[in-house]
Image 1 (cartoon, rainbow, N blue to C red):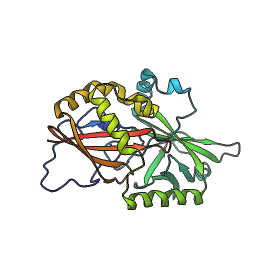
Image 2: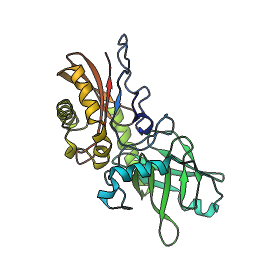
Image 3: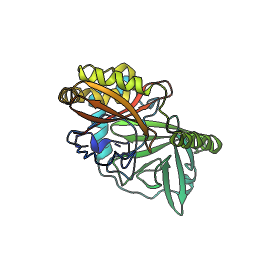
Image 4: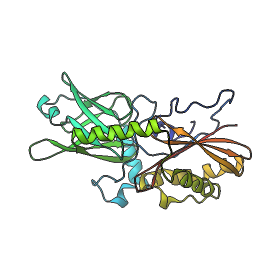
Length: 288
């Protein structure tokens, strides 16, 4: 998810014990820099999930990533929420599966009179209604709203988090099962996504020069990375030139994990690509 920077409480990627570091390596995250966009780990201090390939259609693309608009949405998403009562028949219209990105799916279920949601690889978490169509998490500053057809059946949901809207269209259970199996196979296979090493290596060089390649990132990731470029450049200046980059494995949330050795230290890097090769998640964890 997700470090010691201002981005930490916005991180949706759960790190926890992903690919435990070698014994004897006394890691101290003295300058962890999180530049990742993906939605919601309700079990983490921040949030969890992976960035969708497409932005929400609720607003024009340019407006979606305008810095001031993002700040306003963040403030709205972090405000206190008040639970209201809703018709249980409405809740039933929301039950089902919603695809967030290439592999991961939201599963919405009902237990007694309560609505629950689970993202692939994460725990099931209760949602609380603030209106008949919008629900909120109590574990993280994020909300879920449902889009419905004329009969009231949900056609998709939108995750509101980190100042962005993350759309997830409804899919059938059979398709959701195939996606779950593909995700499990990726974790078990423990092989990097095609192109992730090249993309990471190029970004490390670009960040060190103070000119990251925003065109190779999703708009969401680029939007949250821009304000952090100067800080990341300073960290790379301290750690020195890149000497080697080696694949360490696939993390719990499907991110590729690499160990980068520099002249003055070691860095654990996490990277996530969309099916078309765009970088949707990028995280650097600094060590001695």
